[in-house]
Image 1: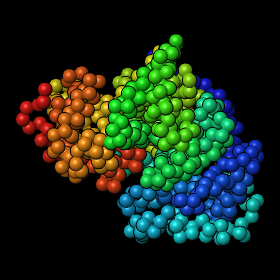
Image 2: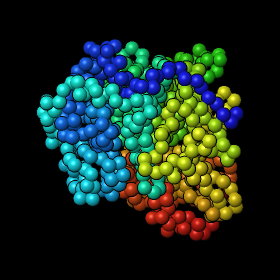
Image 3: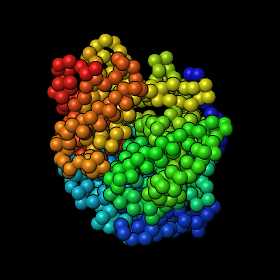
Image 4: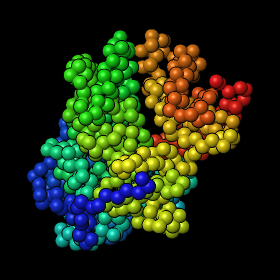
Length: 604
């Protein structure tokens, strides 16, 4: 199959906008809880009803209007994921303006580009440190009139300053936009080059979320549905969920730090979560290491295997055998329930995107009671374009079917192309890039994939990242990288070999994973440099590479690898904020390490 479509399930009046979507939630359940937040990290979750949250939004919107924000103006938000981010987002929309997110890890150069390209007139940042970054380039951004700091009382300042603005003015502004108008400009983090501003419309978010809720109501709108956001709200994935909670009737919470994430999950107790595969890998690896350190490694391994076998049996029409059900019950009592509890105890669903999760982890989590629905999308598609569905609608190892109102097709060269309600309007101030990204009304994703006979999409690689060896073999690095990175010792992997005689890999050790692995294997504490030379560590990495190589042909297999002395992180510029590798930067700065892979004979 080369093309597959699904029709719209919910049609939306073209004159509507996101403020109307929010108003419907307030009108239907004014006294139902919409948001829970904390006033301090170790404090309780404070509920806000839809009516109360709406009142706070209006108060902040009045402050924006009083400070000169006009309809269509661009208002920047630069902060970690927190309650105030969502409050400001909806307040900017209520003021008739356009929010422009900036990653809180952005450099001064990146901040300057977004401020000037989007003509941001007012910017709200989280901290004094963020303000200092902005101050480095503020003289070069003359359109920026004002800078407010959340930690210095920005929200209170806006509320206090807006008391003279009337409710009627906010009501007027809330009604100005239609589905076709720009709702936000999100700058793609990009793995190369200057970020492009993706213009997403009110319709992109409105139509996509109401249709997603209709199609996955078991996940998003079951009684008591609630989710905790910990992905960056500057990224489209979390932003989509922020909006989706409105028509779903779900409760939204925010966790600003990975340090407190497990604690927040435990107290907030979400019913569904969203994350990238690396989060699920780390939860699994951490649990495995803790079990091994406690002398219960074999028990964990048996329980994990049982969970995977049990999940696979669920796909069989006959289901798990009575004996397997008993084994699974024992595994749950000994191990699996502990992982559920670590996620809050009532999470039944998760949506994973950004990279392949892998069949092993997909089955493992489903076996313990967390159904991970893999999806696929980009900033240009307002996050999800395809997603697996609950129950029989899930095919582990695929990224599912198109959402209603959209379609997917595979071009002659294997590239995935997308069409539908979620596809962006265009790149801001960049008609040439917009034209290049489109093909006969279809968005060219740059990813490679295939469709099965039922329309399920499988991702096979990134078009621009395909490695062509000296022997002419095309190799998709993601297949190998995802498998090697699943090892608890590994943080990042970059597969190399373009125009080289064979495939190699650069590997970095995980600063969080190494100590636990060493303890679990009865080894003394080591620095990462010492661990990179340890015989047992190297032997374990050899096995990880060998296992990954089983997924590919001999010509595609990793023959040699080298361990880098520095991890690849967002801070040092080798990862994008959504944790994608900036491959060109790594290859440029570690050219010597790549060359060293091809000195001497290849490993057999």
